[in-house]
Amino acid sequence: MSNRQDRQEGYRILEHPSDLGIEAYGSTLAKAFEQSAIGLISIIVDPSSLSGKESRRVSLAARDTDQLLVKWLEEILYLYDGTGFMTSEAVVEEMTPTGLRAVLRGEAFDSALHTPRLDVKAITYHQLSIRSAQGGFVATVYLDI
Image (tube, rainbow, N blue to C red; front, side, top):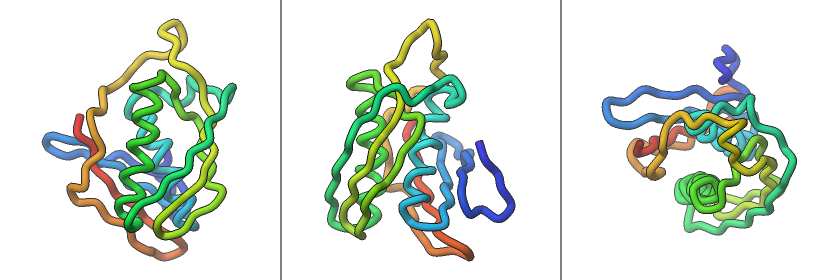
């Protein structure tokens, strides 16, 4: 987990009475999206236990950037819940305000190697925000756990 003072790249987990949030920082919007993906996985499993043995390509379209962030994290959550694929690295190759193409690197869940942390049920629109900040972008999203 990163708590860099310059907040150009990294994420932090936000406490909430009934949920958890992710505040992701990036020098570009794409980097903030990448960090939000790693923040999500860090809630589910210890990311230091993961490697990038496999890769998956992702293409998404949305009506706006807010919905794109939710769909992005929903896809990463689906890959974990639906196929057991845990993302250790996310690389956004192309991004517009309403779409993205990315490569996710990671590996299949293995109970001998990985210890689950929390079960994330859903990505929410509650207090969702994407804003430009000094030196880049900040994306904030809350998760239903």
